Length: 179
Image 1 (cartoon, helix red, strand yellow):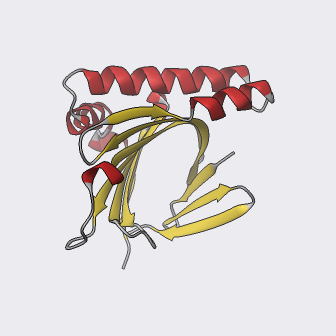
Image 2 (cartoon, helix red, strand yellow):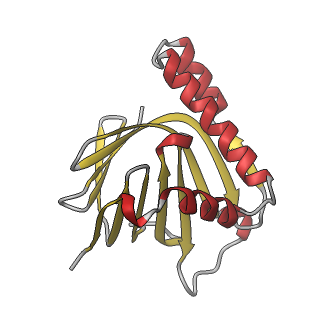
């Protein structure tokens, strides 16, 4: 199972999966009552240079928007433009933590989209690794992303609609840029 923690003080995204830990320095971070945004370099990838991330705990989704490296040749069918994790989020004052719930929604550079890892989700249920509320969170997240995306087949519009709902200046808890 994968867990991601955002440490607001250190401006670090820490990803724990399969006994390994990867820490990534965040360049820009904004935390609202029910929305988290960050911007950071995408480390050690042949196509992707930057990642923007939008975490919407109420919708049980975390949306990665991936920016490709300039001048790198690639087939649009090989790259991810958006990668959406279905998640369950716990929030503390100085950090938020997301548990990845296996189901993912991907939009490739050529516009094709997929729901993936249903087999992993099913296996986790069979192993009793997921609690009943986590299964519900995963299905809720999938329902939200599909409905939101299918409104006009434009992920940017869906992200914008959620940002407008949650990125209220009165609910801004933290805004930081790294030096």
